[in-house]
Length: 333
Image (cartoon, rainbow, N blue to C red; front, side):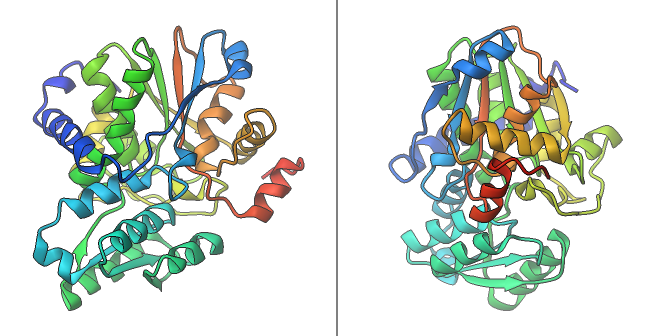
């Protein structure tokens, strides 16, 4: 899937410049998370494996980086009116947190598939919550209505250069902490995280391999790259609920970058995702939600091969406590 000319592309250059600017903009407002070695996974892989612990981010997921950068990039008039987004949970929580820090109104639109714990966490931060339909498309339609009615500024969950740039700051940290990184393994959904990290890593290490990991149920970016264009997929329940939803048929940023920069894409079964969650807790002592555990799950399933130092992104920890206890206790999907 990788394209040799990707680094010279206009979109690549724009994204890289935006990532460098984002780093200064969000400095002191988000955590620089640890890149922690995993002795057990290193032994299994036969190469050094490090875990990028975005599950320890302030709101429990990497999304705070992109949401904070996007809000701080708005003009004064937009900030006064407030912001709105569609979310599967973590982006909404991040936007609510970032908006509260700026004293702004925030509205988060979600489908009925979003777990209750994520909905309540967003409400606790003072954001208005609209539950609409059973898909991201339904939630997005509500966003469009509120933009038209109230003049709110939309902060998309992934297909936005400011959001991608914020997530890309993770890649800058990885290449600083692990300069000889050979493979970076990233949870893949709408592509904001994968695109941002891929740009940052490839700018410093053009030879690095970038692997996206998603669930087998409704992997929108995987299907879109395979088709050569953004396509719609059926959204179904998964342990990796944060990876659900489409990429948007009019995708402007993330499809192009993921198509050009991802070396490979791996799909996991629900049981493989559960195995990743279980390993993260019992071996690495980390609480990780399904989407955050897919890199571990892929490595344990033998679906990732690397010839050198490898970084796995643990993207979030916001899993329902009862579901986590059930999975850690040995239950499958």
